Image (cartoon, rainbow, N blue to C red; front, top):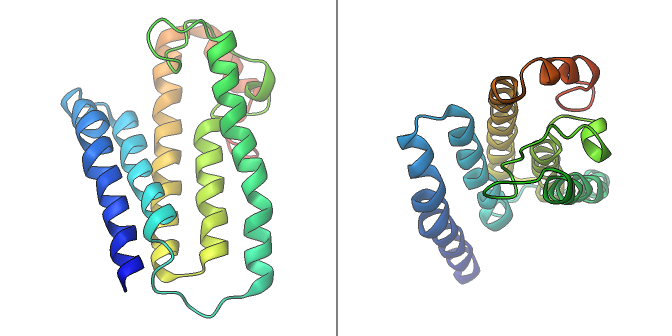
Amino acid sequence: MVKYIILFIVWAGLVFGYIVPHWLVPVIRRRNLGESAEAVGMMFFFAIVTIGWLWKNQRVAWLAYIGLFFYAPSAYCIVASFINLKHRGKPAKGWEETTVLIDSGIFKIMRHPMYFGTALWAFAMVLVQQSILSIVLGVMVIVCTFTASWKEDRKMKEKFGDAYSEYMTKVHMWPLIF
């Protein structure tokens, strides 16, 4: 019971100590649905990481192994997108505020590898944890990251115009999706 309380305190600290005041409140004030979906998705993601282990059901070993397998590609998507954004994006403010359209590296395979990697990681955690709570949280992460990806496309169309529209015709938002 003590470990569950500690996990909940860690999650609450992450969410209410950092994500809500530094990320969610500012984007809600700007009325930016895409960034709001991203922030809420990260709250659910951190919930899976910290408290998704609660309410375990009977574990199916082969599902857990499949979930563990998906950790590597999800981490690759996230790390590769960070590297591409930092080194090729010529960020004006933060690393995510790219000033050029990046269509190489992982961005040649998908338009939103960071969101996809987060969704894939959440899916992997659902398979590994196999709890009702992790299923609910995982679905919420996937919905939020998909919404954030969709809104990010609109933002990038405004920012890069026809070049981004052409990029959208060549590269899927997530692998095999749109």
